[in-house]
Image (spheres, rainbow, N blue to C red):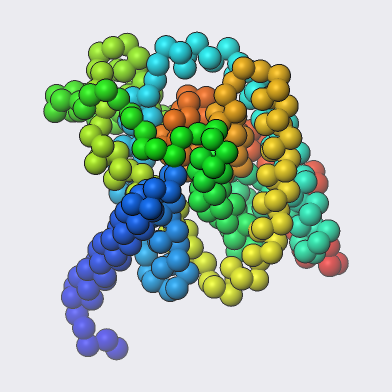
Length: 361
């Protein structure tokens, strides 16, 4: 029997959770600042993500509570909406073709990665299909648990794909000259306090409506829609202050990095080769589709690469913000893939997947 009163134990637990969050933010800020001062592309996101990820793997109890994660996504959505221009809206004519090709690329990537995991790592069909499916991690995890698949292995493969893309994609685009590595200029002016209040109110309202409709990534997309409407119609011209936008970028990097806090080091190491191999397959397949679109349309290569990158929707949109990439194009494609994966994956697993126990029988 514990000698500590329950109320005191609860207070200690709350204090411990608060300290974990403070530690997470401090590590994320330090990592982001280091990468920013080193002039690495996408430094705030990549630096925060890598620093928090390393600390989490080392055993630190790092976490980001839902309310902070939602605030980060809201700020990110407002910043993305402030980039809306008439030119971006004009380019929407190319979306149906590229979205259709993205669906085909997703299908090919899923089965290509699945074949690799089964053939070279002995995975069962269900686990391999779920691990090879890009995006929609929460839906994939729930489906994996329901189907008796290897949830830890799937989480490692999915998480490492996001981590690698978020860290390497900005560097690749900057080195090749496809995207600028300089800090982005989000808007000509900073929103006044009244405009800022209007942006936040419109973004929260749109996000809550999307949540009621069970829309995916509602906080980010709701804020993006609210901000886009106000900026696109000229009601508001200013954007978030640079420091507040940078907080959102560091925050999303920290959120991604904390995914490693839920993994055991032994589990991570045991599946690292499978994760790297399936990632390579997914990238090769995506690159083929990117090349086809780049050669047959007028869409910018950088926009296509980020839109077709098999990474998390929030991370790829954050990269669009830092790399001068069209956020509407990228958002439309990643949302389409999210919907495609969420709708088709259960059917694909039902038709083609068999959990390990069925294989062994």
